[in-house]
Amino acid sequence: STKSAQDDVVDPKKIEQDYLKVAIWNFVVGYCEALSTHKDSTRRYSLFPVPFRALCQLVLEEFLPLLNDAKQKSASVATSNSTNNSTKNGSSAQLRHRQAVQTIANIIWKRAQNKKCGTLMQDELHANSLYTCLCGDVDGKSLDCFGAASLVVVGMNLSGLGNSCLTLSEDHAYESHSKQLNDGETKDAVIVRGTCEVAIPGNTKTAQSKRGREISETFSSQNQSSTQRKKLDAITAETSWLYMAKNPVICENAGMVLAAMIGNVNCDVEKQKLKTGEEKMPVVSGPLYKLKRDLLWVLHDAGFMKKIPFALIELGDCEEHMSSERGMEWIDVTGLVQGAKCDSNNGNEGGKIAVLRNEKLFMDAIHISRKLYDDSQAYPYLYAGHYHKDAGRDDPTQEYRLVESLRLYSEASRVASKYQYDSRDCMQLMKHMCTVASLIYRDILMHPFSNISSTSSAGTITSSTTSVCGSDEVVTTAQNTGNPSEGDTAASSSSSGTIENNNDKSNNKQPRKWQLQKNAITAITWLLSFYDSLFHWEEREGQSFV
Image (cartoon, rainbow, N blue to C red; front, side, top):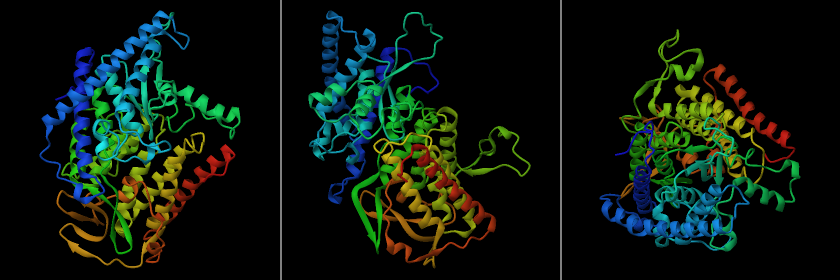
């Protein structure tokens, strides 16, 4: 039981209770993720029954004492600094907050399993939960940047230090907080947020000292040490994609933090590929997908996902893999499609526009990104593009979806081109653009010579794209070429994040023959637009990276 997102929670004790629930559920879901995604099939187990009380006890007996130690150390440091009048880096309240963040982050990193020097955080899979922090040594897991940032925010609020928010970009997470008003400012002034970087692995003194710093300081030190960029061209927090420029998602309450945590659950079975002929396909945990889907629906209904596009597209992804009756409901989206031109009550002359609720989740994510975050997110467009591509690539009657997918991919490249390019900052974004280029060629511009198909009660099915791993067996999920909600998946694109450029696949394909000339013309227009934005990005930056 949780309060809805609209409720105004101001009681510090209530905040602590809410974040304790977040810690417990994060631990439980992390346990389920570890249980069902191990690369060794003999070490993958059924999720149920969940030993809920035992897991709660671990949180109470192992995590809370860590926070108590951190709170005492933070208080001791604050007292020492107060005695020494150490306020040169800002107000005393700001300094105390940063010291508390640094102390909690250091204790969390010390408790977590730490890899050898040089191991990249991006290499960690299933490393984003409290379970990983406390029990990661079982599977040799450390923490990723999201896991570190989310646990620090939970720790700050559980310790009664409050005013600490999980802050998200599309590929990074950090802590932010509202700064105390300075003299002369009023309560009506715009809230100024301070930030703290915490996702710095390792237990060296250097790593520990960097935690809790303002993000701008991190960029400043990087730019000073870099000889590749001129000072005027140096990337900043305001121009960075990794930090979402000035438009990050700020999780303002415990429910939003939990929604981000559940959305970040990775259902892929680690480093495991199932071979069917010459094709390699991802293996995912079906029970974990169902658990993730059902929990996200609960948080969706409570209103905690209204400001988190990432959580909405992850719920849409879950519905693609493990469709529910709710995901297959038809929803009127006339107003959402036409925007200001027509509201949902009036419809249009041609009648109402209805889509499956699954598709509406992607549409909602795009709408929120435009409305609340200045259209700064590429991922909602990419996920929606994958959805339409997979639904239309093998069914001539769904050809219009291929056009829509190209339009959405074009929108994603337009958003990407708004950011200042930096090879480190935009590395993941460029990987996605390369993946999309491969998908466009393989699934949109090309088409199989012939489909060897069989029929079932769900319709015509072709070769499967994803294997769903249950508790006792591996089940191949076939792709439905009619209704995209009935078994249609996008694991090869939106979930795994990697595309294998297997030349053998193209041997069985030929250039697509479009059914309608207008679709062919519109498709090539959006294709040119996709590349035009990327080349414009290069021209503006004066670099060749596309």
